[in-house]
Image 1 (spheres, rainbow, N blue to C red):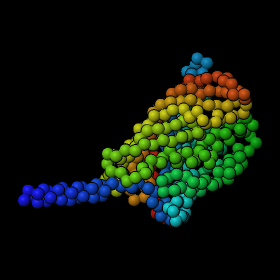
Image 2: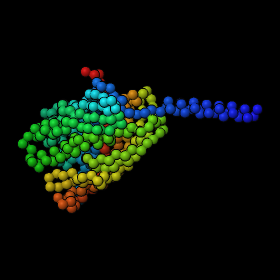
Image 3: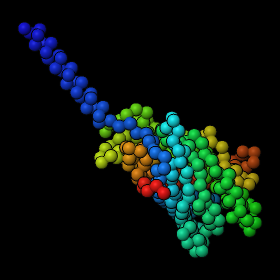
Image 4: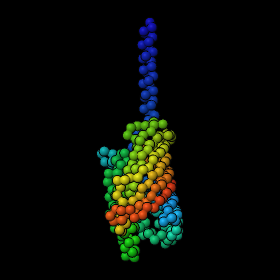
Length: 319
């Protein structure tokens, strides 16, 4: 009789364990890009940063704000789920306040521009890139960068001095070249390999070679699921990317050695995997090195950077 009761108890516990496992599976979500052909989104980003440098014993502080509005249209979906997306620059804003004065640019009011490099931003408006991304959000291919470069060169014309022209082109490639675009999206990829539930976390690592080359290593965690959205939080530490090539500007090369931390939160639509909104905070400190043509150190400039980047994405009605 006791053996029979024991078997009944074991079977009962096994049944309850099965129910608990099923309930746990239902509470998990697999975050992936799951788009449909024809879907369209409007993306707004705004990045504000403060750069503090010490040059030959003199402290210099620069405040910058860059805003972008882009349209994002799904052109096609491959059998393996990869999305071909047309990204179009719709509007841009730029403000800078520093030792050389205050500059501003707004593509909706180009006549009021006071920024010397405004032609670069103007050349982007209305231009598109085609990006192929897999379900994990990794960029497989970028097309259209050469056309952007040609348009920019036409806008610059011959009025800009050769050295300034070269500097602008180098900066453009750093921000809008093939690798820069890939890394921009890589920095926003935080999908876990497996389904996750509230409280679960996973390791993330991103190698950046453009802009400020760095290695970002940390973790993401699913903090909340509500009304069809997943809320993720990210914490990471930053180290210099010693493998990145210096940025060449004329006869001088620039190399950044920056360390620090970054944190952020993102609200993701579970049905599509798209980021509805997000904010990233970043603090960096280190130095910028000016290198001679032979690679020898010419000057080291201590610097600190603090930035806040906000993103908002809304789905639009298909045309």
